[in-house]
Length: 158
Image (cartoon, rainbow, N blue to C red):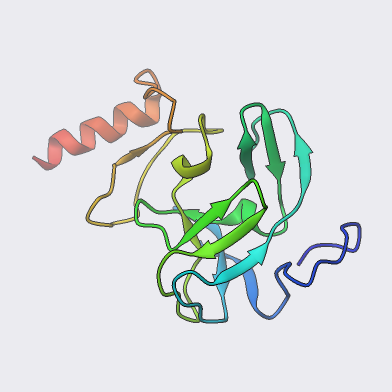
């Protein structure tokens, strides 16, 4: 999955074990696993370009430092009940619950991000869904037209 421009690490994700595919129009692209993993299993090592700005497909390593990975981890979908956890210090991805072949790799974006590239309404459907997704240190942007539509939809549903 990673190009030859990166060092060869036996723990990098391999073609055939994972694929980036479009889940649907709303969610966009995600990483599907063709292997099963048990809770606690190492799924993969990750790599990419180290950058100092926030981009779509980047993951925060520490404040002001991000991993721009357009080959694997940058395409993990969000869920408020994720099935993976990221160790950004050691650049590793672990299963935090059982993952079956055919499952998408799902992370909670607030696990790594202080501020998101873009806030968005959540459609994960989990019992503990937060509804509107921001970074862990980011206030909701109430002026965002998408947020206004989200609030109106919630009010209309009640």
